[in-house]
Image (cartoon, rainbow, N blue to C red):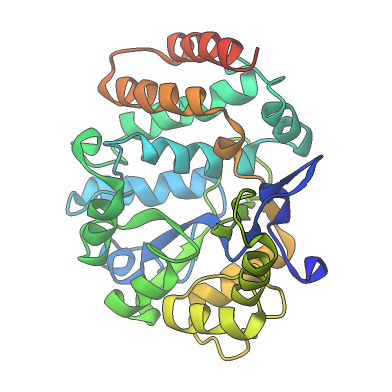
Length: 305
């Protein structure tokens, strides 16, 4: 079964496999084609570069009807999505490895650039006001489905994804692109193992439980999960030939060729907690990028000792 499963690295270490992945999760930007048309933009030409995105967002800022990019950062989750999506386009493979190992400081130029993009996008008016008091799940996404924002960084599986957006907006109105970064190379999709099943080592029926988990990860079982919930499953034997969603087809193409790590998942729990707080301060203008990075370095050093 291992040969058929993607996402195993997120559930493994040098000591072995701890869980069986059921889904693959990742971040992409969904956009409302009808709103693009209303803003005088070509709905069939999503941005490929930071300059492209800047022009698109400038059009929405000028129009003043809806914000360019939906954002819910009440819990700091908006920064997690932004951080990984920008890093996916901006960082080299070695940068990703170094960040995961704690060798790429928050005050390094590569990470400063990610944090600066957050501040710059906010200063340019791309995000809605009140993002720090808006929950990402599900207020941000329900607003997007009501047509209250042009773009949103969403998931590829399970919830806040292509299937739910297709059902609410109509598949013909849902576009998708990868978030570019200023000075970045070709955009990539940050993705990793999503939902997984593990077995308590102290269970009196470990072998039976493992067999049950394997059954849940079988392609014929996961096919139901995909068909009904739109979950992008970890079993590569799943049949996607019947997919008609244009957004989903595009995403599957990226997953075949353009996957990079989800950078925020390689931070420690302490770092994530602190970046949640710092991201809110940055949006409020209560700290600078340099000050936020310095605070993050302190937390990272303590967490990784």
